[in-house]
Amino acid sequence: MAKHTDIQLASELRTVITRLIKKLRKHSVTGMQLSLTERSTMSLLDQSGELLPNELAAMEKITNQSMSQILNHLSELGYINRRISKEDKRKSLISLSAKGAAVLKQVRSERDSWLYQALSKSCSAEELDVLKKALGPLKKLVEFEEI
Image 1 (spheres, rainbow, N blue to C red):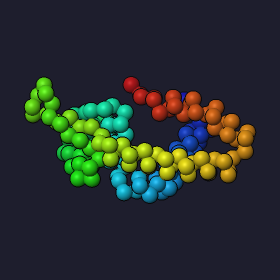
Image 2 (cartoon, rainbow, N blue to C red; image 1 turned 180 degrees about the vertical axis):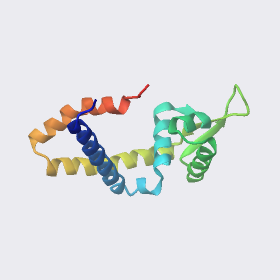
Image 3 (tube, rainbow, N blue to C red; image 1 turned 120 degrees about the vertical axis):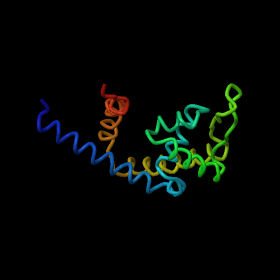
């Protein structure tokens, strides 16, 4: 059974992470022009290369119809490429365009710049060391999947 202090830690961690994410979003002018799912979809394409729309929908945990709307918007902006699959002509493969990759890089750069300044102006050397040590457990949380 979870202790009260463990539940409180979970609650405080969730609150802090949520607020940090909101601040990071706010400090990227480029990123504010896209929805969270659009940015996430672009990141998935950046990591994976080419994916089918239904694969993207499954990874984002949204319907195929919602993913279709997202892909149409990203296509209108010129951020993605579509090509017909050689194996199955009914399917199209989606990849990030050069323009989309540049936008994604800009969003990341804006957020990294803000976070770097915030860290350097608000944290002591000891606090930065604590944050470095916390990265390992935080990565484990991100990778955790309950079975």
